[in-house]
Amino acid sequence: MPLLIQNGEVVTAEARFQADIYVENETITAIGNQLPAPAGTEVVDATGKLVFPGFIDPHVHIYLPFMATFAKDTHATASVAALIGGTTTFLEMCCPSRNEDALEGYELWKQKAAGNSACDYAFHMAVTRFDEKTAAQLRQIVADGTASFKIFLSYKNFFGVNDEEMFQTLQLAAELGVITTAHCENAELVSQLQQQLLAAGKTGPEWHEPSRPELVEAEGTSRFATFLEQTGATGYVVHLSCAPALRAAVEARLRGVRLSVESVVPHFFLDKTCAERAGVEGMKHVMSPPLRDKRNLPVLWNALQSGLIDTVGTDHCPFDTSQKLLGEGNFTQIPNGIPGLEERVNLMYTYGVRRGGLDLHRFVDALSTRAAKLFGLFPRKGTIAVGSDADLVIYDPHYRGRLSAATQHTNSDYNGFEGFAIEGRPAVVTVRGKVQVRDGVFVGEPNRGQLLRRQPQYGREHAY
Ligand SMILES: [Zn+2]
Picture 1 (tube, rainbow, N blue to C red):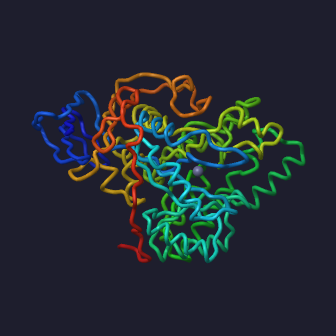
Picture 2: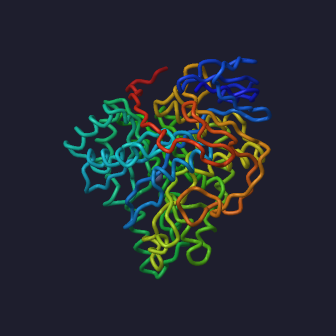
């Protein structure tokens, strides 16, 4: 059925204007004033609402065996949570461990998602080991439309790669023209500091941050950038959390390294005192990189406004209270992660745009458009234009509410942002022209989501 969004205020990364949007066969076919509604058209009244392009979360974990357990969401629960929060596409980390076969892992992740997602999705392929067989498989995976890699410079002996493997992965990425995303920490320093702290009887979640301090992340960022520079590959730092790491990324850019930066929602709102709370409350706020000293928060917000931080993701990775307690008495065994997929857009709109003066277009860019461009989804996703997929978020800026585990859709028994007030939420969310959400309720097709296949787009040479 054709769809007409009437009288909304369209907001993209570049423009803001009053218009109707007409959708046929999953695609936007007209944008203009007083568009006619032929018989059989579904009409959505967007008077007083903002109409955004569907938001894109560039960094989530859904199916994830990790730290002796599994992240709690399924594609069914995560995709509904995403849509209710205004995210219409996510990029999931496909993370087979170092002991697993890359291609088998890729097929497993695809199979977990296929037919089970209510929103569109794509994968970043984690390279957790590099050898000849893996290289051949990675070529196949890229040819299948998964045109981005992920490497971990931490999580030694599980997901982590050593410098030799990083170099080889980036050489292959440069040859194939794919972008490589990286978790930047120094694995050896983390390992040594963890052992020292545990030996000194420092076992609670408050020691997680001191076991991977800011310099450890700055070193990882700087080393990743150096390897990008040497190989001519294009890179993307995931979940950058602190000023020293940002400085390392910016210095690399000033040398001409092609490097983009993502920060994730928890680091804009929470600080390390959350992990210092007693008992399991502290454990709920253990993630890597860890929550930092609060002096970093204004640095991240400034960097987001100015574009030094390109994108805002979540690193969504829900573990429930009983799983967090696996690390009772040993902080190195606390499953790392916090949910955020459902909360990202409303939190950034409320505290960024409404209360913090974040430019509305930068908000759309950082939460949608930039990720679409970096990861080969633009202009199909990430904007509102004739020919683009009709992924639309009709946003009610007058809604008032609070975040709570009691009302969330993510499969977790806690909410990392419990009690945060929000000012605005999606009123209607569409995925390729189909209304999937109305006023916080999922009303759509649970299996509407499709795997998005992407082309490599990064040559060895600068385009300018
Ligand atoms: Zn992650």
